[in-house]
Image (cartoon, rainbow, N blue to C red; front, side, top):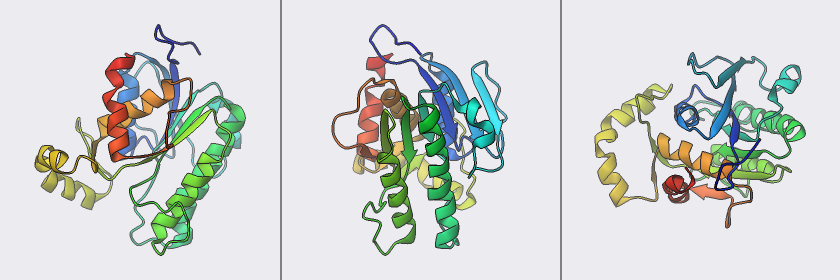
Length: 240
């Protein structure tokens, strides 16, 4: 798939959850980045965006990728941004979306693209012990552990806390949008007061692309909190 003059891999990326808030931001950064050759989105619904390097697959059964397996081959990065709020959901229902769909996609991708970098968007407070009292945290932790144990070339977990949507991006969850309208103007102040908890959709996308370009694993933990993600994103200018 080639490398640039600095020895960084050129990226062909698959984005899951590209219609969600974080996924929209990741897709935007992929389309803007000249080092990304091709982007494939996979989800129940297309994004509706048009771009020369964008291809989309509307796939209804996210627990079975057999019918599109061949179309998923030839990519070296997957940015898995698909997720839902656990509010009002039973544990089996939340596990189906958060764990079972994630693993169904990952198992297919690691077979057809073993040299892939897979990045899973989890959340601050996820429970990697899988034994805590908080349901969503246990399920997220189980998904994290399963992804990190798979034989991808590299795999990472992102645990963002508060994420500010930029560039006209919005959440599909109404109360999230209400929260952003209230706290959005305060983001610069909050970023100075609590830099370890604040991120933007742009920073998440840039950090993912930095890690996808690397030919070796990032040093240190493969579970990145908001502060870590921001630090990776800040190095973007060094790799362009």
